Image (cartoon, rainbow, N blue to C red):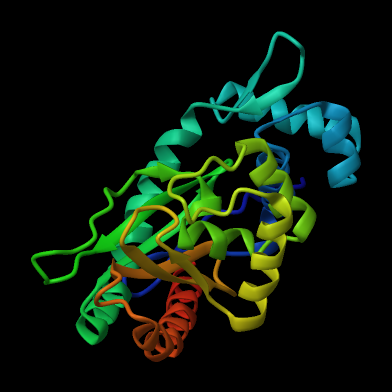
Length: 272
């Protein structure tokens, strides 16, 4: 008489459970990988997409995509629109907010190091659609200092972190973003044409850092650096009054901010 075998967890000597055989759940792991891939494709498409577009981008057969999407819909991570297209669901919002808080917690020691060394406010920011969202900040100890509320969203073309973020994209994607926002002038120094912005992107990629020279707020200068090689597209910045953030300050600060950005990317990768 044949007996059925069921994979069960085993208890190690320290009381923790161990997975008896990584081959016991291959289809479940594959489905999880595919579901995450579909969510990322949807995010790259702007948060809304059709099944046929998902098939083209993922290379998966439509029945597989439909099965995975239905599971994501049932759990609130995806929702079906009246047009029969699919969009990222509301349950992802809570996950994103929790992840953002953790990202800020992990980044804060790196930002604090910048403030200790340079004396000016340090920020961490990410792209959120066509806008920049600030996810962490350590303020300057000076009485007169820059303060940007965590969670604030700004247009990318006039902010140092925004330019550092868009410089990580191909030119066509970066310029499509600023064309959608319209590039309004925040000050008389704001870059307001795609042609000038394209030249600015080339300069940032060449030097490795972006400058907001009173383009977002009058009298404020900001140095921003892409966090390259990390698990997500981010940028860190140091900002303060022009009287203190001089061009000599920028020359001195840029290598340090670049080293901290590299250190932050490595730290975040070790946590994922």
